[in-house]
Image 1: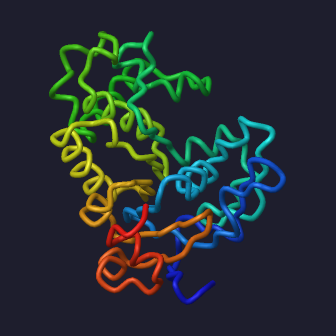
Image 2 (image 1 turned 180 degrees about the horizontal axis):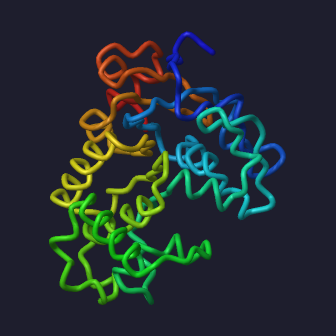
Length: 260
């Protein structure tokens, strides 16, 4: 590891020499090595096109949906190689929330929460379903708002409520890690604040990796921060340290608005 990459004891995720290429000569992520802390919010920052989302999606093997993309290197989840797991098991252990809220439009709020179980062929008793729905929606601060509308379609909710529903859908499977790709970029400031408060609360129970282009958001809610540039991990440190005394001039340039 370089001097600008923080060491973490007993990480939830260990990424080693990870590279992702869209074509043979075009690397979106180059030789990234880092560890992700348990029960913390880790922010991945950097200018557009620097490989943030590509790195995030590599963690739960989203790229395997596109056969032309090649991934090399190693990712361990609590010491277990994610590339040797079935994708079904991996995506139960590592949940994903996308940039735009995307409740399944034909499903009710109730069924949206349980979608992961249905898609994976799990059979649950009605009482188990009810408990998962109530507990998970309560965890994201949504149950009191929708408890009388559980049979309505998810897309009748506001944007912020829809995103909390999508987080609930990821949490329902009790993952170890939650990946979020700019989850508030399509939301208004009030909804954004609710999501940020939620993530701060959820890190007690989950390990969270957050891609954000919003530096003030990273400063507010992340414990640790990565700065990526041109596919490379330039610096990785505790957020407070990175924002006050960045070690690399490129990190400093980005944080002070000189580029990006």
